[in-house]
Image (spheres, helix red, strand yellow):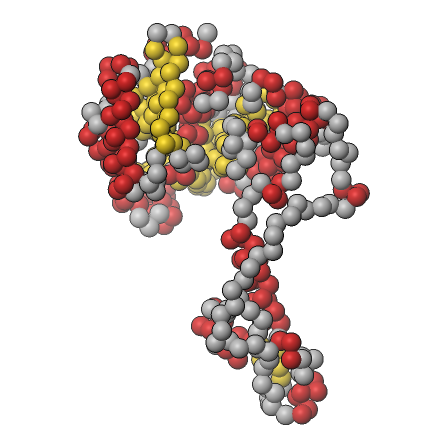
Length: 422
């Protein structure tokens, strides 16, 4: 049923996937889906990358007839796109337009270097909500230049979250025009997309996928992320907090902080080490200073200390917070699915910019058929959140469709109504 839609769409979709550093080709030929991917080595959207893209497109063009016969879509990663929402008080149409333009000028200092698409998604007597989607002009022109050099027709340029929404609308007519959170769980990563009345207004990526549900053990979430930069930031913040906590009393009885002793500029560049002991003015002040005589806080600021992070180990929760360890494979899949559900609920709770559009009460999950039982199990046992979890209910359960929603949707992005294309 779903494949019948493809006759009215574009010939093919090319998807740039930086998560696995691959360029995908996706098309229908003789009633079957053809899917091929080629790896690339350069940094995304650099000069070298565009040269690689041209070579890859030339290869697709030579191997697949649909690529040379019809127009195609190029789907960009969500990281190349900026999305936002803008709430404007109700006013006359002309004043509303001027207010939107003025606000965009303030939000995007490089607006002239970007292509921005705005759309009014909600309007009432009090306010109007506009969706904003933008991309750098240089990126779009470079993509078009690379496809033109390869003689590869690329009529539509969109992004993964938007084409995924198009795919779900086609593959599950019940969700056409609906508002929900889409949890598209792939093998090694997950795309969370906020869909309002059928259109994608925002997205986020998780660096783990359904592979953790296939493991015969409970996944430790803190081992699935690389938090090196964040951990260093926390350590440095703690040390700067220590520096601000150290105070002495000057001759006027005024408290002097470490910031006063070092100056603002030096405070902003404190090395990653303990702070040195402040100088004391007299015995009386020394007796009042709780840090006096403590040699442990004296260091040489001229030496930069190199921090070495401790080896990562799984965090162990207190016994009263631990859940029973599963004993079956389905139990492990259910337990590990809770990680995805937790992030979906956090996304719903913390997305303040979507609050004017109303509460999200449904999460639709795209998973391989053998794992969808975990979605139903979680929805049956969780309560109190006010959010229901459902399998996405794709009519065509072919693996190459389910696992590549962004590419499938790219086949129809040009003919779908109210879609974002560049």
